[in-house]
Length: 139
Image (cartoon, rainbow, N blue to C red; front, side, top):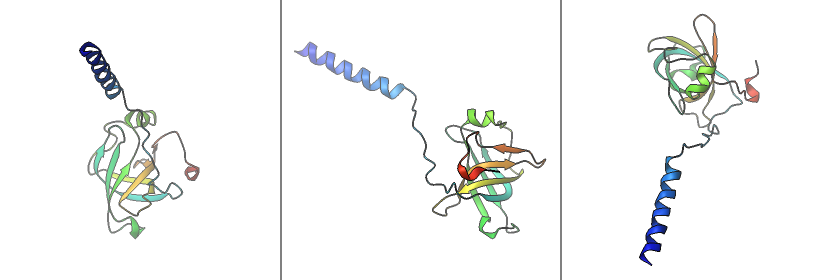
């Protein structure tokens, strides 16, 4: 009886370890963003986080902004490293102090975050978040 219980316990622990060790394949929802709206934010990069599962660009838009609703510090969420690399991004695309213009989808709750559609570099080059496009991302 003890041998049977030991085998069952070992199987349970092994199974738990197997599922805990495999990569997570969860999808991160974009439901908090209003993908029907495109807002342009023009400011300066505070921080560029080229990372998984999502990269982030923290920007500050100054009081001289054309759209007063964009003034402040914003967390612009982008995609994972592999998707961004496919779109031309790298670890050094931006650094603190760089000027930046992004077109992004604002948070539905009005907080200071947005989902990147694309960034415009000073030379006019557009860098997109991903190849996938939402219906509102037509040009």
